[in-house]
Image 1 (cartoon, rainbow, N blue to C red):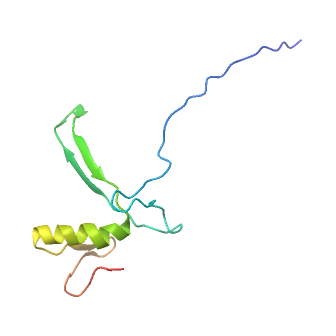
Image 2: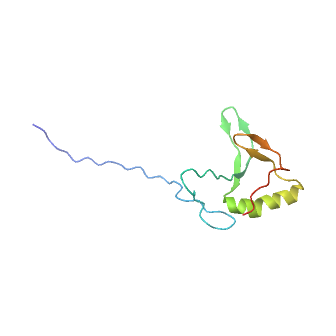
Image 3: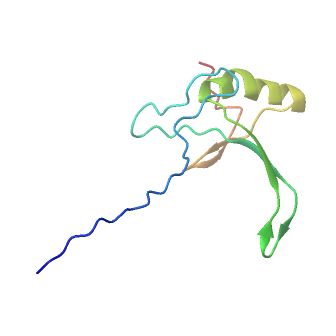
Length: 104
C-alpha cells in the first residue's frame, strides 16, 4: 500500500542581471545577433590580492559600443595624446597608420 504525504519544497530566490544599460546614453546594451561579439569593458580593480583572498574594489562603467567609439575612446585619446592600440583577436596588433577605427 502507498501512502501520500504533503511535502513543502523551498524555492531558492536569487537576483540575476536582467539587462545592462549604458552609463553614457542610458540605452539597453543588447547583442545584435547570435554572432555579435561586441564587448566593452571599462574597469579598474584596485586593492590587494593575497594567496587566499582578493580584497580589491572594482570600479566600472557599462558602455555600449557606440558610446565607446563616439565618446569614451576620443576622450581617452585626447587625455593621453595618443591613438589607441588596435588589436585583432586572430591577427594580433594592427598598424594604426593603415587601419582606422570605425566612427559610425
